[in-house]
Image 1: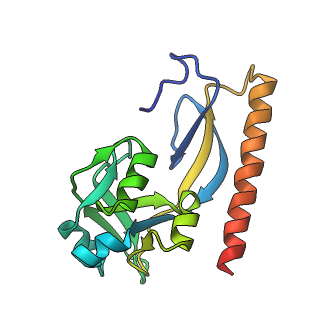
Image 2: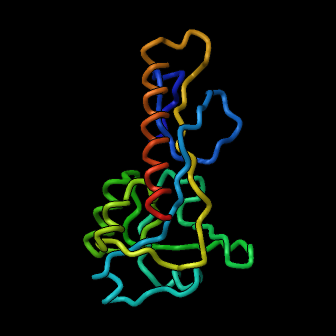
Length: 176
């Protein structure tokens, strides 16, 4: 669930989102390409989508806390934008559950590439729809206010920014 940082007295939260105006403060830690993936087993049984509209005929595993759950967005090869209404038999708020379901061959999922690099490298998940890229996700630390930010929280946020920045740099170097 998305928590109310102020009402529930959270010091810091981590969200992958597009930044919007809000009563909380956000610090961008990193960006991650979002990729559309499935397991080889799923693709062998159901075939591979060629264009985003083909996803309507597939079992798509969706994240329930997305701003537009059940609607996936793509930038096409000519810069066009496609919004596709997808459906499937699993909609949940756990990225680990969605990743495992995709690995188990249950469907197609949109996922931050930063968190599935090993699975892609090992061929356990396959990137789909070349040329059609979902908008990247922004990984943010969110907190109620900059004023009175505890030193331990500031150090933690700096550590996350450094760690995720290093992971992002390593991922970019692997692509070269």
